[in-house]
Image (cartoon, rainbow, N blue to C red; front, side, top):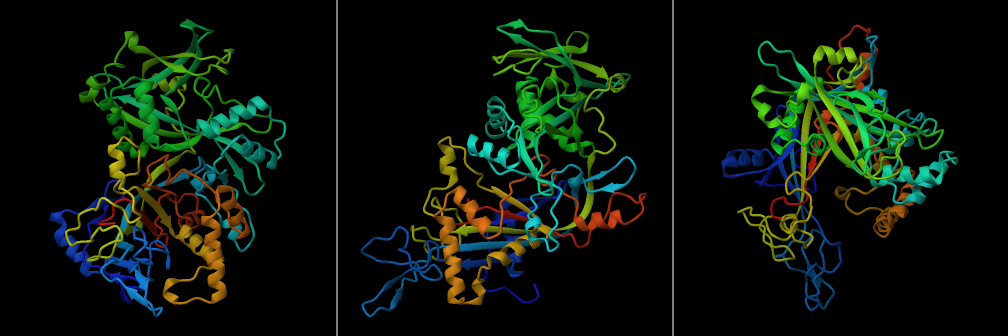
Length: 586
C-alpha cells in the first residue's frame, strides 16, 4: 500500500473471483463475481487489490506443452514460448503466454472471531490448546533457540501399512503388544480412522486418542410443560435376531465417534440418519441448531462409552485410549416437531433403535461375530436428567468454551491461470475480457466439474482449499524457508552454487516417494507433523480459532479474577484461501 506493487507482480484491473466475510462466523469465503459486482470490481482494481505474475509453467527450457515436434517451441522465462533460430538466437512467439499466477489481497480490519478458551474451576486462566494436548502442529521444537521441547501431543503421520505401525510402537518402547492387538490397533487408526496415535516431544510418550461428539437434544416445551431432553438409557446386543446378554446401562446424551477425517457436521449427520433414523430435513435442522447455540459448544476430557467404545479397549499395558468430547446443543422448536415424529413420542416417552455392527467383541461377553445393537432412549425432564448424572448433559467446570475476541482479518486468494490476460495458452484457450471459465485447466486437464458430471468425487470448484495462518505460524514458515535457503525471484540471478543446491533439492523431492521425502526433510533438519487441534480444525468449524499466545501470556500475568476475554492487538490472523481449480480463465 505504501511502496506500490511488489516485483515481480504487476497490477491487474479486474477479476472474476473475490473473498467475502461471513459476519456471523467471521469465516472467509471465495465467491464468483457477477455483473452486479462491477462497481466493486473496478474499485478494487484501482486500489491494486488484483496482482498478477507470469510463470514459466512446464519448466524453463522444456518443450512447450501441447506443441508439435516440428514447431520445436520451448518454455520461455515468463511463459512466452520461443524457438531456436539458425544462428542460435531465441525467437519468441508473443501471441502465446502459458502460465499466470493471480493474487488478490483483502484487509477486513478488526473483526469479532470465535476463539476456543478455557478457565479452570479455580478461575486460573489456562491455554485451552495445552490443556487438551491438541495444539496445532508445532515444529518449533526443531527451530527453538533455547532447545526446549514442547509438551503438546503431535499426531503421528499417516500409517501406510501394518509394518509402519509396528515400527512406531517399537520406537516408543512398546514391544509387549500382541499380534491380535496390533491388528485391531491398525484397523482403528489406519482403516476406520476413529482413533489416532499421538506422541509427546518432551518425553516421547505415546498415546491412543479418540474424539466423541455429545449432542444435547432439548425439546422446546409447550406452555405449562417442562423442558425435555433426549437420553440414551442403555443398549443390548443381539445375535441372529436373538438377544445376547443383559442390557448395558449407559446414561448419556446422543453420542457418536468422530472419525479423524470428518468434521463434526458429518459425524452428527451420520448419527441422525443411521442411528436415530431422522429424515434429511430434520438432520439439517439439528446441524443448524448446533451452530446457533454457539455458547453451548465446549470441549472436555471424558470417559469411554461402554456401548459405543466397547471395540477399542486397551491395546497393551502401556497404551490405553484417551477420549475428548466435543459438546453441542440443539433445541427442537415447537414448529419443527413434525420433522422429528419418528422419535417423538413412544410409550412413556421412550423408543428404541437398532444398528448393525461388524463385530460385537468387547460388548459384555459377546464373541467376535457380526450382530445388532439395540439402543433404548427416553425423553426425561431436564431436572431428572441432571439428578441421574447423564453424561454430556452439563460440561465440567474446566471445559473449553467458544468466546468472541477482536482480531484483524486479512485474506489472500491465489489461482493458477492458463495465460496472462489478452493472451492465448499453449492449449489454445484465450484469456479474454469476458472472463468466462475455460474447459481446460492451466495443466492441460479437464476441469473438476467435468469429472463431477461423471459421478466422481472431486474437490470443490470454488473455495476448495482454505488455510488459516496466524502470526506465529507465519513466522514459523519464515524460519523453515530460511533453513532451506531458497532464492527469491526478485533477486535476479542467484549464485551458481546456491542455484545448483536449490535445483537438486527440488529434483530430489519430485523424484522421491513418500518415504524418501521424509528422509530428505530429516536431512534438512525439518519434519512433517500431521495434526488436527481443538481449534481451526475439522472438529469445530474452521472459523473457530485457537487463542493467541500473546493474549494468553498477558492474561496469565494478571490476577486470577481478570476476565477470560481479551484483546490481542498483535496477534493478527491471516486467512489464506487458495483455489487452483477454477480461478478465472485458468
